[in-house]
Structure formats: C-alpha cells, structure tokens
Length: 124
Image (cartoon, rainbow, N blue to C red):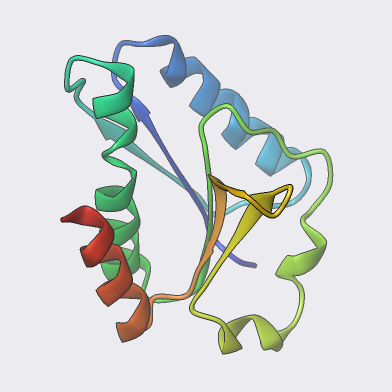
C-alpha cells in the first residue's frame, strides 16, 4: 500500500487534526501513515511553508512514492488513483482548482531526482 504523509505544528489544533486524518486513513485501509511534527515558526503562513521540507524529508526517508495530505484532510474511501504501477511514471501530481489555482493540500510524490530538484527549487 502507498504510504501517506502529513505534518502538524506541535501544540496547535492541527495536532488533533493530524491524528484524526491518520485515523480516517486507517479506517479505509491506509495503514502506513507518517506524521511529521514541526515547531511553530510564529505564524500560520510560516508554518505552512515548512511543507516543502516535510516533502523532501519524506522522499529521503521513504524512498518510494507516497501521497501527501494536509492534516485537516479526511479519507472516506481509499484514493482510486493510488492503484496501479502506472503511478511510478509520474514525478508529482497536484490539482488545479478551476484550472487556475494550484492546491497543495494533496500531492502525489514520486521521489525521483526530478522531484527532489523541483522541491529544492520551491524551498529556495
């Protein structure tokens, strides 16, 4: 099964959100959930900017494709797109809302060199 990755800021409401996300993942059979705990950087925006570091850390730690979801996400069924070997053909997959706004709450990540290069560019 494909690993799921998320993160939360310690001692904030997102900590409980992350645990609830993990529970919802377990309830639909996604049993490999990796939650990263981070320290607050002082603001919601600064805390969210840690996402790219989490993605890079998860690439190095897992060394296999994974699905990143924000802490406030919930699973109601296993994601259909997580089935099949074809997923390894892609480096990253994200969703554009109305073909305009990039949404980063759910990201398919294949830890290829191209992916890591892109994430390091985002980090800069």
